[in-house]
Length: 138
Image 1 (cartoon, helix red, strand yellow):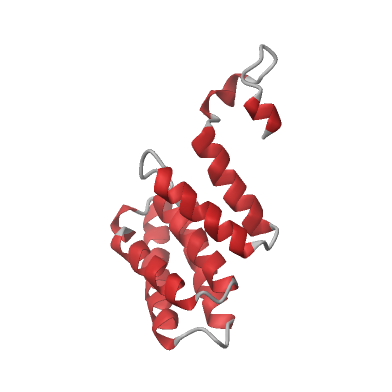
Image 2 (image 1 turned 90 degrees about the vertical axis):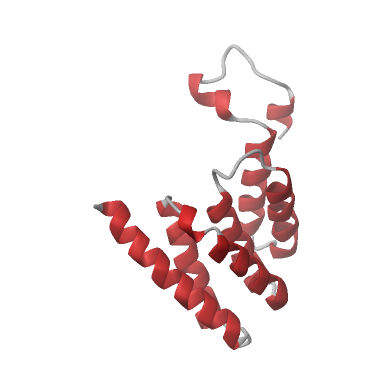
């Protein structure tokens, strides 16, 4: 973050033009999630989703937010996020989003405390995503 805050340098790689505040927020949320800091990851995912400039990573970000909420046992919020993910499911065109949705469904299935409604919603969403994945490969 400090390096990014210092601004561009002549020695930066040619591809670094795409790194901006929005990208940094996304990666911060992903890092917190990977570290198992789910409460902080939830806050970061929500901040990213509230301030993003387009829908480019919407389905992937919603799936990641839902996964963090599941790991934090925030069931009501996870159900709401899954509902938002279902609402945008027609716009899923990313293999990463499909993989994250599949992982979300697996995480919910493995959780003994997950509500039945969340289990059913993620199972149906994963089934839909799996069909999308087959179409993406073709």
